[in-house]
Length: 396
Image: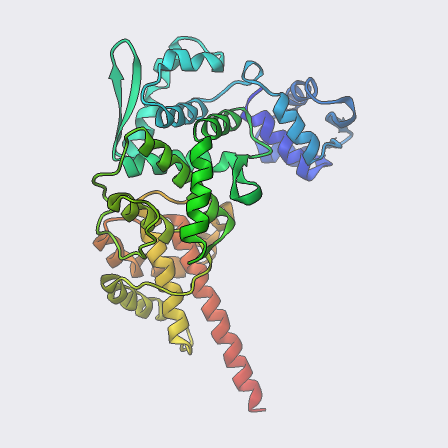
């Protein structure tokens, strides 16, 4: 069993009965391959929710509860991991421990001895993207080293999808983790148990009285804080980071160390707020955003009537986007994949408008951020069109 099998079952859980033709086209597999997948899955499914081909449809009665129970039964001895899955799991272990023996660690995946060596290029690609290195410690194992802030952020991005926020803001395992996700969540929740509680205290005392974060932002913050406290306890502190003097941030004063707080404040500034009682403007960025707003307004047919709201929305988005792209603090969003095709002229206009900011802050906006900015412009274009219609209607 592998990741495809689990993805197939999840899609069926949401879309049963599924036309055979649609399944073949969507997954790019032949019907005979899908039948083998169904047989493999049925071996671990109760009879009442097993998969069946009913004429031209694939059907199952499985619900979310049964799907979660199924995933809990899938252990590594029945699951073929990919190199990417193994490397992500190992990366988190290297973050949580000073030294990890990769050969011993890989035994839990039920893979051959040569797999450890074969996975090295995937690990090198991951760490080099964050300017990190994996050091070899003779007769002991491997150690992760490099920019401490980048190291934590990389681990957080992996851990984030495997946990949820439970009662009283405590982090718990995601209820529908696949085997690798379950392994990552278990080691994080076990190793950082004390720090998870401490992170909640900091959040409730220092942060939530000031701002309100959306669910995903709150979860990211709690994961980062828990991991940071765990690594600080083990002697891994931020002493110098690329985050220093990057953008003006609000000083939450969560931690006793100034360098740690610079990075934490920057992280908080990049998250999604549900309530922001103030905007702390960066003097350098303000002038850049004013020019960007002027350039973006040029692709609107009508005049923007609320310039303050227009500037504030563009500023807050670009401020967060700079941080998110500089430190890889974002996830892909399939809902935005089609924006460039639908609005090619706006897309090109947005790309040009942010070039100056990208150059000054030495970053590149992702396709996801460009797509979001295009949709923000579309929203204002629609508002202006509605306003124009109302004004013309009032003259009748």
